Image (cartoon, rainbow, N blue to C red; front, side, top):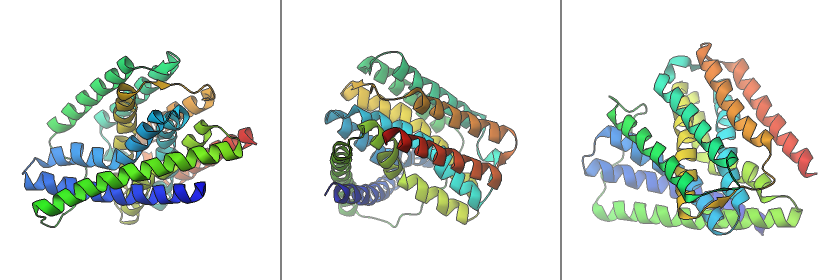
Length: 306
């Protein structure tokens, strides 16, 4: 039953996220908002809603291991699994991300690890600091000349259809997040493993499926640079927006079983990505190396749970 709840939750998260993004972009286009606003705010928040609602639902349900594990595990998977897979399909050029994009990955990673390490919980104050960083990130994004990714063409929608997509997408996301958290915590209890482990793996990869689909499709179309922009933006949003907003709404206790290896890998994958870009880009060899890192990490988690 728990597995069925997870599968149903993931399906609802995917469908709800797609509906919410389509409705939000159509609304923004109808309101004649600048394309930079659509790309940086509407699409950015829309594609991060599965992670957002899952972590928030987990925190409200008293499952901090899933709430924090989802954010950290998603960031690890985004680089080591998703970007690694995209690079195996097609090389990712270094110039696909400018200096400011890379700087924000550093800033968000350092801020996220800092609020986790400085105490036994992420309080509302730390959450507000992360949201302050998000505000600066969005301000800088909106001041840039053009959005990195083209906004998808959305057929003209009437007000009723836009409302249906927005409300239906949001409701579906909420239902999917609840099912995913309930199923994940049930599996954790049934197998006798920690919620943090489930959050770092099943939940993290599940909520990152939109990024996985986007990156793989972009790579197969010969637009691997879009995959890089997608991952960089997602990792920044995961920490500043999701961890920040969740902590402001409900302070999150730091799970006692969250290991230094988990935190170190968040920093290490970000550092390796930046080094690879500084050396000229991410080719197939580096992509395979990233995938090997992720496989090794999942294997290490499995051995620890055995």
